[in-house]
Length: 414
Image (cartoon, rainbow, N blue to C red; front, top):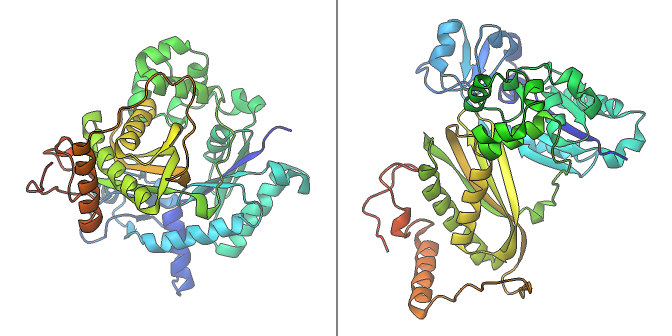
């Protein structure tokens, strides 16, 4: 039986959740029915648009644009600041509800997830019937709406859920790709960012179908590995595996929102160095090594992508985590400005667990000498005592601000 994958996405999550909470507390106006946005505040008009109502969208207001621009388009716009604590709670209860249908849930952001429907498909006349029950149940129970995309893999399910909104169910099975997806502008393809689209348009590739029918070698010549991924997505090629994990096995990770968007790989490396040091310290404190490393990117326009790899040998070494994350980053980065970076580890095992070496290993890393062992131990102890990043290698220091804000130049360098 072919897999059946759902992508479930809350419609204008931040705005919808704010509206539901206000109505619960006696508000007379539903923000979803007036020109309204979430982001910044009404007095200063600073910040960017995080979510918008359908009425605001009709004024041409876009997610990610400055709030000041939104006011120029719609002077009577209502603006509310985000409440991330409330959003996390709404997300938690939503995921709990979805897990009453199946535990095969992969949450990919606060307001969206994948569901592997395959195992429970036999309970329903069709996948669409199952999606209707889930969608209508969410609306009745919680007061907000979702879109559900249905397909045989995650990429196509994601594309389907982005079709007409809100409160809709769409299918995009492989046999429907040519009719439903290929006529769309290439900019609507999942992970096709602005710079990638500009490059493709210069190659006279304007629709998703154009890209799907293009020579892969030509695409990779101009967009490298990211181009290959886009070409595969355009042809409906993608993973169908929903990465569901029990809560206790999710692993250890860390992420940081950058003070300024990073636009160059040279800006990204030291940030991954700091994140890796933090994750390494937590792994060591827990007495664990990681078998899987995942890297997360959130772009300037809030699109998020993650990429993971299984390590040849489980590790909690900061350098291993850093270099792995950097390698994953280079494989999928579109070249667009980055707002957030993260490293996450999973498939944890005890630090004392024996390693199984391959007979094909051709090089065994040399053990550090006594001086470097003592130096590394001292760094770990100082960071544990005074907090992550209290002491770091000089190579991780840079003049430009990193994601944690300004770094004190007076920090002691080793």
